[in-house]
Length: 115
Length: 112
Image (cartoon, rainbow over all chains, first blue to last red; front, top):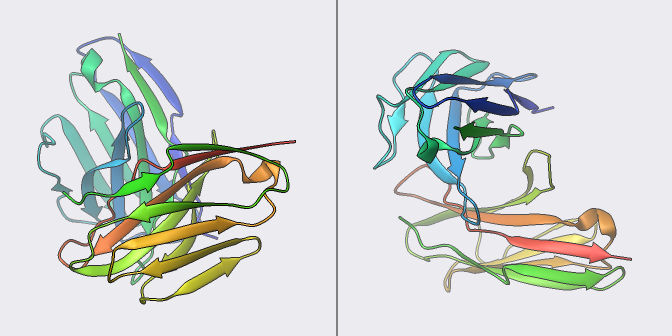
């Protein structure tokens, strides 16, 4: 149990367009989901924490209007990168946790390339 | 932002070798330490969650120890196999912020 899927795995888009990434918990209900970004040779950096039915909590330095997070159900969270620019090119990965647990179950990640 | 350091950054061993690597973190406000294994093109997989000073956890040939007073954890792999090749990440969880702070990982490559 505790499988998390993420879609798409890779996306290439033009500068100025928006990209939506989906994160789903397949076999459990996730009250909390997390979105991370990883730049080359760096660690996973938490962007935001989302709880089902409420607004996401963004980390310092992460623009909430640029990285829109929606956690409308207990199994789905989406991250939309709005008006993407080349500097947004990165590896985005989500995770989900079960109620009462600290362990996070990760999706396989999405490689975003903005041309 | 927590300072989490992992060493070495990368490691290359032969099949059958035993190896270990380190995760260092601030000892103040410690709540738990998570270890993950991340194989290429797969999702990071939770290995251990450790909370108590002196804790030792084991999963097959992999084990980990925890020292919360001095702020470090060791991960050991006994008799490395090629399937152990992965990046091993540690992430402390502090009591003040309910979020994991990841180190940059130790990339392990095991060759025949």
